[in-house]
Amino acid sequence: MAEAGKSETPKLCPAVYQYGPHTVRGLKPGQKKKWCTCGLSKKDPWCDGAHKRTGFHSLKWIVPENPDASYDICGCKHTKNAPYCDGTCRERDLESEVKERQEKCLNKEKHPSCSKMCTSCGWVDF
Ligand code: FES
Image (cartoon, rainbow, N blue to C red):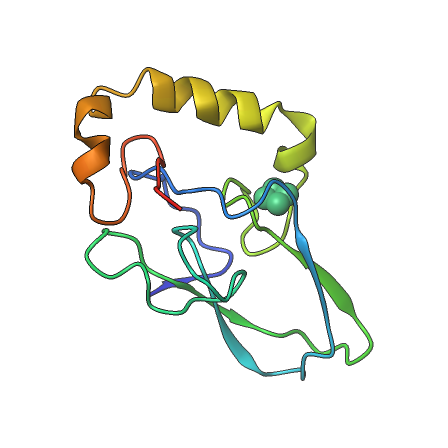
């Protein structure tokens, strides 16, 4: 499991759960959460273990000391400030970038036989 705040060069391309953040409220300060980095979780933005055998790992996040806070937690998996939305989902035409990357993927022929996702382009058969 990676930790929030540590910068890592992404080697794998995540799936996009949604093109925008989840606004999350009511978390307890000090609570430990695991942010989904792969985009496959059915409990997004939190990990449900769906990343197994993809090479992705959840990211550990401890809820800060601010009981009344709400947090915009990234749902596109392309933030540079995980687990928070950093605006990448709005500032770039991320949806077009993802579609283009998937159309040009060198593994495109193998997509129909992918059991979970293509980690080269983020393609997933939802
Ligand atoms: S939802 Fe990922 S950067 Fe905004």
